[in-house]
Amino acid sequence: MAASPYRDSNPPVIKNASQPLRSRQRRWLLLTALCVLLPPLTSKGYRLPDIPRVNATLLTQSIKPQFAVLFPIFNLLALVLLLAAILIGKRAARAFAGFTALAYTLSAFLQNISVTDTYGLGLTTSTFALTLLVAFAWFREAAHPQVVSPGLHPRRMVLLLPLALLALWFPVNPVTLQPDFNPRYLLTSGAALSFCMLTILALVVLLMDVARINPMTLFTSSLVGLLIGAGNLWLEFIHMPELAWVGVLHIPLVALSAAGLILSARLPGGAADH
Image (cartoon, rainbow, N blue to C red; front, side, top):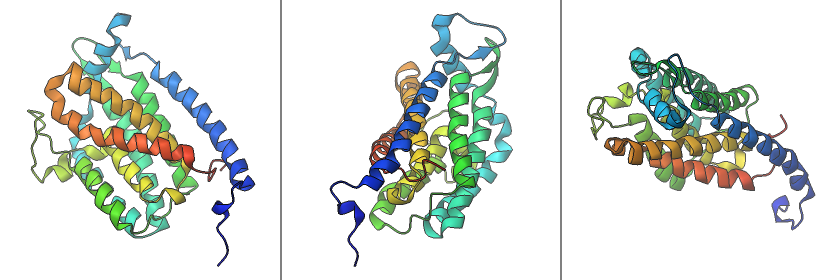
């Protein structure tokens, strides 16, 4: 059996391949930082010190519930394609990437546009732009697939798959916003059109086998996931503590995103150039 190139103490091929990846990661990091600084847009205006409050209001009163007819369709597709991407093969992983890109694009509009009495028509520009960045990364993945079927890793399956299923289930009563483990939410939660829960699904697929994935897809999903996830923890544990249970369901997003960022920094160049 041939010796693994990874045993070489000074592997020049991997070193060279990683250089364009690191450069690209720095560019995307700068672009992400610029997106974070974007202020919300509203038809009635607001004072600059009120930006955190404006964002919180717009995000918690988005137009997404008005499109509840889409929830069962996207939740079911997410469940089927998640399992297929893990169990079947590269074609299923590519279909999952295409679905994920589409779901991110829709969620960018549904979750970040709102109409409120206080601010009128509003757009949370920052999270809107960040979500579209991740959608772009997954559209690239679908067009030039690098993610392949992760295969069966029993230990990872036991750890990661329940997190994906919990995210898709999103057991929250839509009226009280308290824990509600009604099984019908697997279809009606709308989690597949929620950036945070969709990112948990995406990261589960990516982290199943980090040796065979596109490091830029992992980096982009993890970076934005960590930023938006941390923002949600602030919103739900500090700014609006009555949403604490929703905050608990966002903890896996922060944990998986942090793990994804660490792993993406250790991966060789992979598909960084395509």
